[in-house]
Image 1 (cartoon, chains in turn yellow, purple):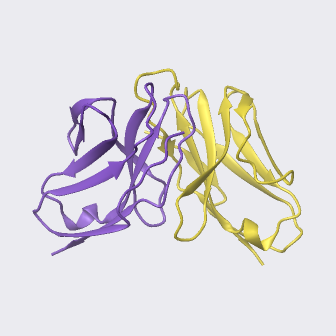
Image 2 (cartoon, rainbow over the protein chains, first blue to last red):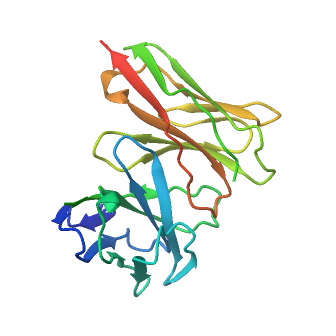
Length: 116
Length: 109
């Protein structure tokens, strides 16, 4: 069955450019999460969506980062005026409903962002 | 959110049982304990989740003592393909996941 997909798989950009990362969650999953992982590090939470609303934006590192989700499905993470410290793997995950007893998050393969 | 502490790395040999212990001294009453596995260049994958006592599924067991201040992930008869980073997470099921640096397990032939 289809899992979480992300595009592009790799993105190389120049400092100062804007980038848009896309996540297609598993169909029917109401919760969607964005994380980022720097080389050799654990995952850092960025933002969480329940449906189309984002009750928790506490992890967004700066106002250059924004995210939206439409139709309770696809989500895009936008980074404006990219900086070299934004270079990382950006991971998206979805889960059926965080109210269930077991909140298993299914992760996509990630987008590797390199800012030159 | 409860902070977790786990060993940075562990080594094992194929066929052995591996136990990875995680400390979470300030776990809250409603917190669950969840373990994820991550291979290089892939997103993490859910292994097991529990609240108390023992949970077992087809790939692992999770042992949680009565005080819930620690937990142990048990991988029976590991193979080379179990070489990965293992993350212990503690929190509400409605929470985002807070990952530490995990335990890097290396399985040797």
